[in-house]
Length: 156
Image (cartoon, one colour):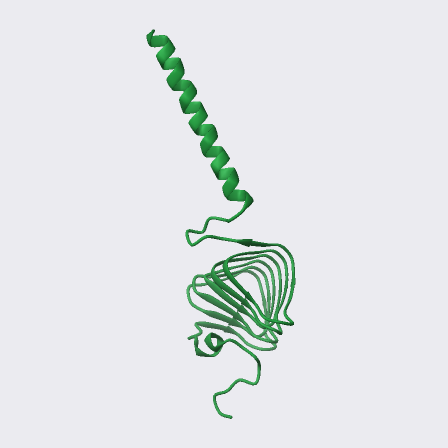
């Protein structure tokens, strides 16, 4: 049928305006940085940084770290991902690396080997890291309390 994709992909994958395309069979060696949406159907050997969306097609491969607002993966990623919005790992997708994302959707039959850390809307990491921040603040607070006590003792 016309306009319908054979692959089980996200509807966003087919509707997004793509600013940069690495076509099937193409190989890009080096770090890729783009202000718009990037679609990879070939191979990228290097880090990818997108201010908007990164779409990795079924035949697409990225061998490097990824940083983007939103990411849709139908192909393969070997590297760490930092996603400030939504990460979708579709059924044909494969990630070998650590994920840091605000929102995560993993389809049945997708492959993920790594560690996942969830972020809050403000970009702060949930879990152990935010506890460390609280510990740092309480240490500052204790230091301020000690200074105040020294000032009071000196005034007496």
